[in-house]
Amino acid sequence: IGLSEGQSVERAKCCQPVPGERIVGITQRGRGVVVHAIECEVLADYVSDSNRWVDLHWHSGQHAAVNMVSLDLTISNDAGVLGRICTIIGEQKANISDLNFIDRKPDFYRLIVDVELSDAPHLHRVMTALEAESDVAEISRLRNPDKERDLQSNQQPVT
Image 1 (cartoon, rainbow, N blue to C red):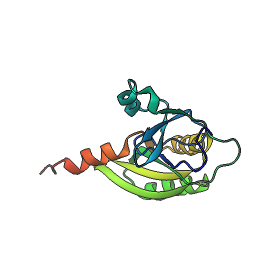
Image 2 (cartoon, rainbow, N blue to C red):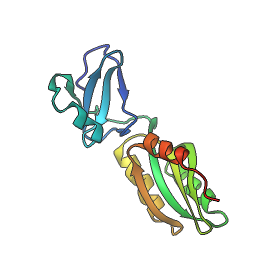
Image 3 (cartoon, rainbow, N blue to C red):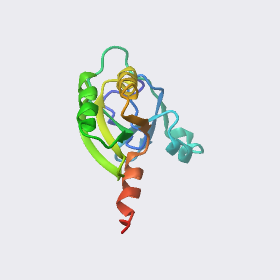
C-alpha cells in the first residue's frame, strides 16, 4: 500500500523484506519502486535524496509463500542432520529454493538456505523450529546474501 496504480515494484535483494516488516520504497529509474526493509543499510545511500523515498506498508491479510529469505545456518556434520533440517523447514510449510555450503569442517557445516515464506511470522516460525533442533549450532537471517556468496566465491581453497 502506498504505490500508484500500475507502478512497477520489486523487493530489494539486499535486505529481502517480507510482509509484516516495516518497509520503504526507493524510486529507481527504469525499475519503478524498489522495496527495502526499514533497517536496510542501503537506505543510507539515499538519505540526502528524500524525493525518491516512497512511504509503503504491506496490505493486511494472507500472503502467498513466495518471499525468498536467506538463512545462515551452522549445523553439525553428522549423518542425517541435513535431512532433518530440510524436513523441519518443510514441516513449517516453507519451500527451500536453494542451498549453498559456505564452509565445511570435520565437525560442522555452514550453509546458506534460501527459503520461500509468506510473511514475518512465518519466518519466525521457521527460525524457531530450526533453533530448537539440537544439531543447529547457529542460525541467523542473512540480510545481504549476494555479498556473502561473492565473498565465498572469491576465497581461495586452503591446501
